[in-house]
Length: 236
Image: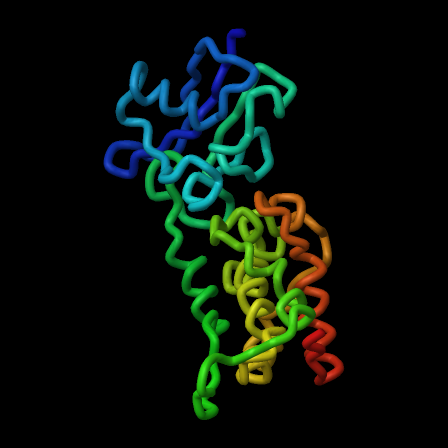
């Protein structure tokens, strides 16, 4: 089938403002958008810039906006879009460095702000810090995040104000807040109970729909809100 790709282009070294370039290529319905971008870069325009790494939906590096929705380019197929007219743009809400590449520094700054690591200063046990299967299951869903930024950059609250910590950072906080081995839940909840914290979420569900790992992000955000309001963290 013939496919038309309209691709966002911006080279800060020579472009005064962004524009779109259009490419017409042959593609199979089962081709991934990443496959087509690779073909265009290899056969039509070697200057086309985008991030990619594993190409198997694990690293999260090739998140971009495809036909108005955030996807991993390595996971979405041509047939999934239901059209042969495809528009590819960078993620919204982050500065564009070149073409489809955005500056991820603000995203990772928010991620680091919620202390995304286990904190426990109690004496180390003889073997390991144990928890029940139910305690482990409590935060299992939010361990799946691959930091692709698809959720945060699909959020209107983040578009409105980049100081909002964003869904991905809240997911990272949730993973440790509800971990029975961790001892810094109160500290993280205090961080998120800020004017640009968790209550900036207006429960629009864009983040949940955008997540390539199918994490129930809006649910996790709601659980963090509840923990702040009640002062209780349920580990099972």
